[in-house]
Image 1 (cartoon, rainbow over the protein chains, first blue to last red):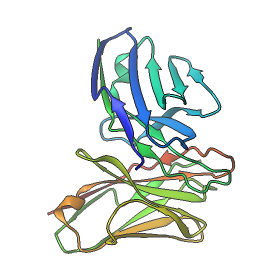
Image 2 (tube, each protein chain N blue to C red):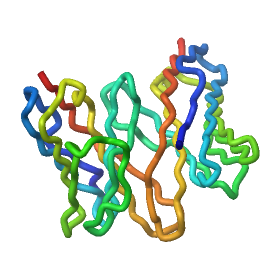
Image 3 (cartoon, rainbow over the protein chains, first blue to last red):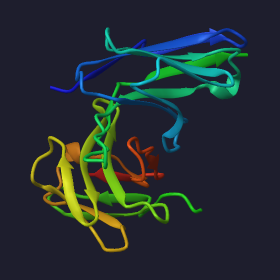
Image 4 (cartoon, each protein chain N blue to C red):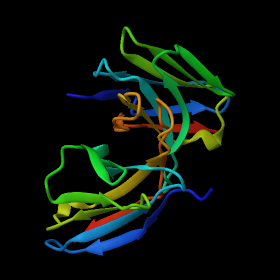
Amino acid sequence: GENVEQHPSTLSVQEGDSAVIKCTYSDSASNYFPWYKQELGKRPQLIIDIRSNVGEKKDQRIAVTLNKTAKHFSLHITETQPEDSAVYFCAASNQDYGGATNKLIFGTGTLLAVQP
Amino acid sequence: KAGVTQTPRYLIKTRGQQVTLSCSPISGHRSVSWYQQTPGQGLQFLFEYFSETQRNKGNFPGRFSGRQFSNSRSEMNVSTLELGDSALYLCASSYEDSLYNEQFFGPGTRLTVL
């Protein structure tokens, strides 16, 4: 069935270092890959997403890469700051034109701790 | 625009009871999805509604049901509550105007079953 694996489950970095979180999806029909950040007690917030027709997308200190052949996608955070500390979730979705479904399959999350 | 809102924010129920949770999407959004979040299982898809019709359903028992109203507000209902239903229930809405629809989450309803 549909599955998204996410690694690592926890990640501790020093402020200013880079952080990389990796996900692998099983459904080859997946074409939309969002990343959500969830701070303690807060709602998941979309931080970046990538479509299957793009290999890489960058937004300031955050970038996402997609390898459709290997069914891998990764989140890269550069120059990490203490406020980046949160749980990060990757997700995959198969969204047909007209939005036959918005169903997201989530990874298990990565707890990122940025040490000052 | 106001974000996705959910009511109530917290609920405490006992086993066997039923509960109804409400979700108001961002104005103009027509799709509402529901997710269950637990420490053990993570975020799991419950169901999705669009234009008052359920168009996708996750692998949850029939005790979990939902509906959507003409103003796109959605409710989910859980009957015969079990201890394992304790979770954060999140809804997410999307606009549905393009091939890929970003979903925005509400703050969630934390349900505790005693």
